[in-house]
Image 1 (spheres, helix red, strand yellow):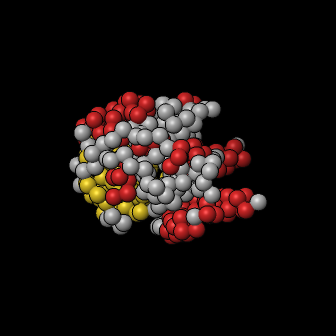
Image 2: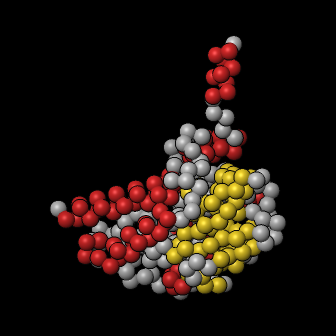
Length: 284
């Protein structure tokens, strides 16, 4: 009995029902538009996205903030997830974004229509989202699909705070994976336990087949600067636009730690390794 009691104490807590439901529905799926039930991450932070794409809802008494929108096809399930959590879509007051590629920004126009929220974006992202102009130096320019245009209600600069009632986020320009990349940081609490949360934009060196990073040294330098910037952010919980890039399923299930002060550094180090490999492969 003593051994059994010790084992019971040592055993990790069973995953929450919302975590189990998401794992069941997303088993074998990681598509951009594959519907997934909502899941609470920490405190007032929820993932309302798909099996493969993170869409964050940060809930507050004065309204809610949503970051990213996955694809246009995914928006009905995203709106349904807002309702499943007991929130009203019209109480989403601000839409933010990581970068302007279709897997994260393709649903912004439809989600704006469904919520009436104001979209805030960087000047670089505005060129794509509002005006349909992909950056000339985007490594993926030749393979990008256009997103439905949506008016931008405010232009963000590096380090700018975004507030909605007690919610306060900080915008970090992090170009590299995309020229208009943006990451976000804020604090969320469970009781008195408050954590620094970072929604770190994608850091992967992805391009069209004809693009060579070795031929664009300034762009590589910018990506390395962004990787270092993400690594240096105060970071108890790291989240990413592609949930698999930060092992979110495993962390929510408890097989890996959700809270990890080395999370941003680990994410950045993996990006550096992939970039170095890409450059080495191009040199062969």
